[in-house]
Amino acid sequence: MEIVGVDSLQDLQGKRVLLRADLNVPLADGGDGERVIADDFRIQATIPTIEYLVKMGSEVTVCSHLGRPKGNDPAFSMRPVASAINALYPDVVVRENLRFDPREEANDAGFAAELAFGMDIYVNDAFGASHRKHASIVGVPRLLPAFGGMNLAHEVRMLSVLLEEPERPYVAVIGGAKVSDKLGLLRSLISRVDTVIVGGGMCFTFLAAMGERIGSSLVEVDLIDICRELLDTGKVVLPTDILGNSATDEFGARGGAEAAVRFSGGIPEGFRGLDIGPDSLEVFSGIIRGARSILWNGPMGVFEDPRFNGGTFGVARAVSESGAYSVVGGGDSAAAVRMAGLAGAISHLSTGGGAALEFIENGDLPGLEALRMARVPS
Ligand code: AMP
Image 1 (cartoon, rainbow, N blue to C red):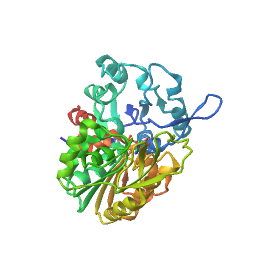
Image 2 (cartoon, helix red, strand yellow; image 1 turned 120 degrees about the vertical axis):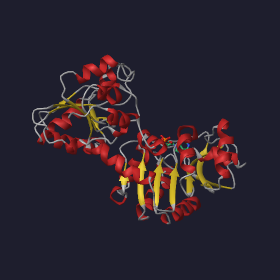
Image 3 (cartoon, protein in one colour; image 1 turned 45 degrees about the vertical axis):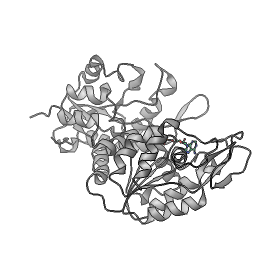
Image 4 (cartoon, rainbow, N blue to C red; image 1 turned 30 degrees about the vertical axis):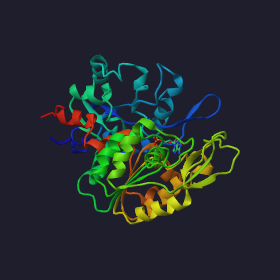
């Protein structure tokens, strides 16, 4: 069964619509304790669905989670998001953060019934939250006629290209902090892609599996054997040089005192790796430019620190110059592409981090399944 798109509905006049959107935007301190939206990428993505519903004359209530609040914490209020939406659509109702109520994440049937109360239809446009079995994602579509929003449909369409018959060579570029977060993805990708480029904090567990010295770099010792199995496929490409600092220096958005040090042929004790080096970037860029399909998830280093952002921005440039069908999933890599002003040259920047990866891994998500199983009015 297919997901029915809300844009296939003509008779929406006067209908009360509950729109589950992904308005989980990063917030920053605007001074005076005020919270302001740091990046409205996800709001923009759901505007076409709101616009359609409003134009068709429906009464729209939007709901979303925002961050990971512990209880009813005003720092995670939807107020700044509601102001942004109401500036464009004054009559749209924006509910308070769904996660202020613990029954949302518990997928509580009573909470789903409260959300559905008084509504005529449900629309899920929250692709980025559709890997969660939460009340607003899988509970409500059991109770109301349910449809997919335009952003959700767009995400499914663009990501599905990589699941069907991607043009070859198909290259995955995987980075970020830990192997353990991406193990399912790596295992699922390894049989489907031609090459997996591994960078970021996760590359050190692979380098350790090859017997390389990694100093005090991030490592997951219990995953070394699994990395060895992945390396045995012959498809994994690792960095050959690394930038880092001494383990006593700081790193992160505020930086540290030392200049970056380049290591090739192993990292000595007392030092750690925080970005791929220039030789590695050249090799990675060559492979990326030769690809016809690319999936990129996760930064190549601690890109928040200007000393260690070269690998991530370099990969962003290579992906944008490749001319390949390119999908960038995950908040950090998508943010790097946008910060570098390269978004226009990428085929698809996913709004979903975990959801995009789980969709690539399994070809489905609980929220999509719930829409397919939902009642459709006759
Ligand atoms: P993820 O959420 O798994 O994609 O990981 C992103 C985080 O990984 C970013 O905050 C980076 O700072 C961090 N990261 C990337 N490379 C390294 C590294 N070599 N050592 C420690 N952290 C890293």
